[in-house]
Image (cartoon, rainbow, N blue to C red; front, side, top):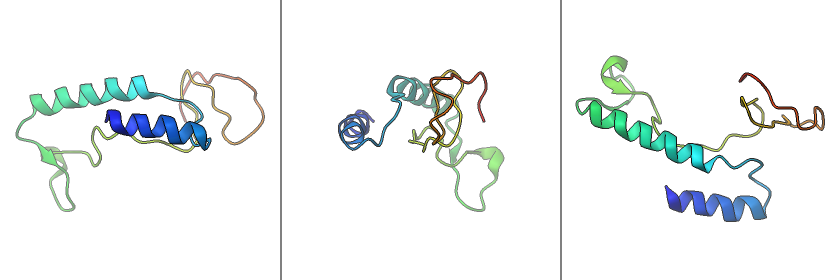
Length: 93
């Protein structure tokens, strides 16, 4: 995962793909997911047609980069608009 973070920080910043880096949060989330996987050794990754009660959700623990079209609690989000400048949302949408 550190390789992906390195590439995202170098290429993303240079090409203006990344507006707000949340790499620390991604690492914490990944470690939490690893812990959950260890506590549930009989669960497997979900595939189409599998019983959802005995599987992990699709992409469980996989960090993603989202386009800034959502509001993130505690993060400045412009949602593609110039306004509201530097307003930090109190809830996620």
